Picture (tube, rainbow, N blue to C red):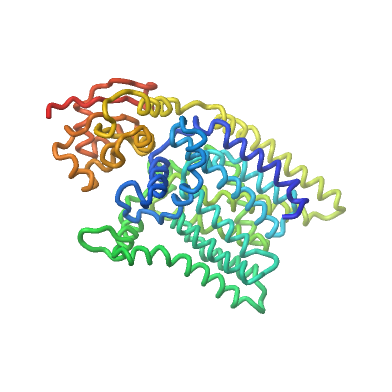
Length: 493
């Protein structure tokens, strides 16, 4: 970037980071995905790919990157709950993604103020503010896919830029495999960004970077003897089959009562302006050649989200947000530049567009972002983590405690034995490596840290149900559905 670009990027980046830092440990309420990825990052730091048996649920690059970032908050802020340390480690990822939105905007032909506006939309959207704080693999995938777009649109059109685009896209897929649906969009972008006389070399370079980098994952599974399904072991292809067709679908987004409909309702409630405005802009942006890559990305990701019967996770919207911001800002510039008359009229129209956006979206965004920065929803997790660290329970290396994914690493760092002393509740009945260490079943457990996640799963996990039936509260933090109870298990073995 040139020095002039820093004038536009720096204040937006600072504002975006402030909205993510303030209250990062207090909002939103943590979930098991965050704890799982953080625990897997901890396992990488200790020479393993996962804290329990790695079953190829996702490629491991996402939590490998988290492992590279998370050691510093853990070292500097050891008294914070581990999920807060992990969220702090996500801040560089959010910062880099915001900057890349600006870079892509410039390479799509947007003026500096317009590219900065796209970056601002992305930085302040209430959806982005909340989801960028959380420990999601999608955030790593979006960072790499934006880097891939930036390389593919490089104005210098060097071959190594296009090799780097393929490599970056492979890293995106190895961070979260669902981002792979954007491959056709990257190919269209590369076609548009390459020179006709060297286009075949550009595509060859992109393909080599993508294939050679992406092959590391199936090669690892092949060398481990875990590429193909078989008796007595996990497999990459077996898990892929489950992920594509074995998971329960989220239903139709257009049918009330389905998970998909609820997700779309929640997303629109948080930020209807960027979602609706960006989607409408993406449809119109197909008429503007330079905006087609961003518009096509919105279309492909929207079609995947709207497919009937597919599984739709909460964090999926993270993948769409940068392209919504780029198409909305880019189409506004395209319309303004087509106005007849003198440049002063166009400048006035641009300022008017910003003013209208501020009036329409500003109050809603302010309230949502204010909630994110001032809410205090997670005190119960802070208290429970402190209980695990400070409460005398005997020799922690011999005591067994069941936790949700969020508090599992707190228990480990408090001195409980990883895996079979600190036990993630999902593994009680589903992991043979754990069940064989519990010959008396629930009677071999000493404590349960009862969170909303555990209470929601107890009817589906027999051992967990028995633990609740024989547990006596010795400490309670909070009240209502979000409370956390420490249960001591009364057994007579």
